Image (cartoon, rainbow, N blue to C red):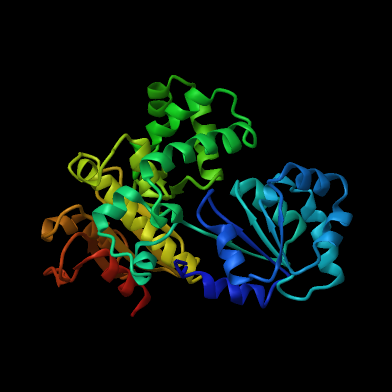
Length: 389
């Protein structure tokens, strides 16, 4: 059964306005399935087939003639030179929705798009399934189960996660890390990947990562960039409002799918994860990820970061909409109290008049309000408040 994606309407709008649409994201997030579901009568050109990729490099015009638009061109990163030829075709006919592209390795791909298809191509980053999407499709998955399993679509079609995750990681290491991103030592990179999973929602410290993995700090920095490039993690940048304060400048590393992070961290059940000392960090990654997914589905480009002073006060998520701040604290508990809002109060004091909404997102069954006006809410309630619904 097809699980509807919240981004479907946005993709249709993009395809009605732009000659090309590019769907990026990590492997197996459902990019190809989504486009083929939305446009079932469109021709399909997979560039992960070596013969097609070679044709795209050596005989691009002939290949495009064989697949006239509208066409879905899958895995465009295997033949980035084709983007220049798409530009020529688009400039000859700027009708919307002619080329529907998918691709991984976001940063190199976006460099090619910005050079060749600037102003001609809409871009959307597709994440794994949000819990709200699963619930809407009739998959009654509890939050702790989602925290452990994550949102890769294949796992919600009955595939055994004990078999799927090892195959996914092996494929990622072989196809992306070795063949595309040119990392030679896969065992060391695999250790680095697992060390990062144990640090989700923490400020990144390249020296610590390097020491625990047995590599040089510069290599750790480079490899963290590769994880971001391939859509496995994101770097949550610190929010700088009042620059007179001594603020933490390092980004946080967050896995974009908590299920993948749980597998890499060695957890083999939801109970094992939620009983561990890492439960709070995984909860923070989960809340951040659901906010990110909702923003992507609405084309909401408001910057999302975190805030922390050198003295210690911290707010897990800060959304800046033209100077109006929404502050979100993530707590792995069911009944937070006033002391759990100390970071929110510190941000309010540092940015007087700018914090318009304060929330503690936790496992509460019913929303309630603290004396200082902070709302204590569940993740689903938080998402509604963020959109005013």
